[in-house]
Amino acid sequence: MKERDLIEQIRRLTGSGSADLLQGIGDDCAVIEKTAETVQLLTMDTLIESIHFDCSWHPPKKLGRKVVAVNVSDIAAMGGQPVFALLSLGLPADFDDQWLAGFSAGLTGACREYGCLLIGGDTVCSPDRRALTLTVIGEMKKEQVLYRHGARPGDTVWVSGPLGLAAAGLDLFRSGEMPDIPELQLLQEAHLDPHARVGLAVLLAQSGLVHAMMDLSDGLATDLSHLCEQSNVGARIMAERLPDYGKLTAAADFLQQDPIEWMISGGEDYELLFTADPADSKKLLKLITLCDYAIYPVGSIVEGKGVTLIRDPGEKGSDHEQNISYQGYDHFTVVGGASSRTP
Image (tube, rainbow, N blue to C red; front, side):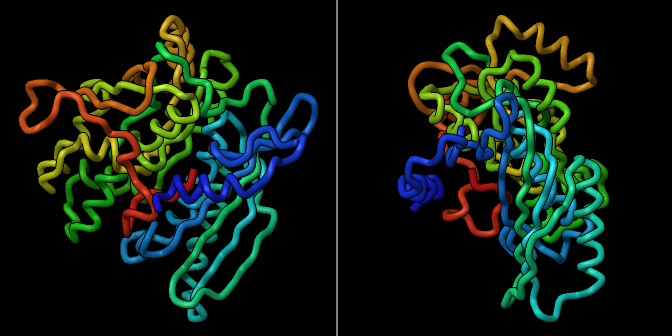
């Protein structure tokens, strides 16, 4: 059973919900009405040792930061601001005090950075590995919430930054090579210490120009497929438009990998993926530039189903048009993966 099939099976068993529940299973967060004008956003993620992180190369302070960032990214995916967090921490009985001190410093520091307060949680003894679960609660205006289901045929598909860096960094760690090359160390850092795009997300939500949005955690191929399925549309992505291809060149040469695969399937980008009317492109670019952010048009929404990658027809060894639907990370088909979020 694939991850999305498992989620759908659980969703069917949950019942009809309540009047206050505006969005349940199927988006980046649950959305609950707080007042007539505001909503709460709720999300939860779990990171398991040897699946989502390896302590032999992941410093505890940066791991603490990452636990916060990957959860806050879900709040950002809907345009919200994180407010509170709850931590469930599973540790072996013989856990290292210094490791815990570093992890705690990273986690609390990241909470301060994103403006959310750790208010409680749970600690348990885990038989053989660390298990880290964080719940984050966010807030925003009800009328500004950005869901996955609003994409329309003709929309431009945008991303908020380079893709594939964290996946390339993970593969560098797994290779056992620790090259003293700044370009490669940048990729490793992208895996160790990602950043949620909260400021940009809030700006996009307030602009009223975005039709649908989510964050990129399981790879463009899978996450865009989720957005398209929720919106009952398809998408075409132009490989030549994927941003900052050059940052992956050194790692691709070093590991003999195809950088496009990292960019569409790698996961853990934690950039924003969103769609908007092409007529509003100039407005979006002007708005983003004034606030020192960057966004990149990478394709378009089309009628039909599925996500198609369009490559250069002259590129050696590749199909010009490739169906990449759901070809990103899946927790139940890949062991030792790079992603940490369950949609």
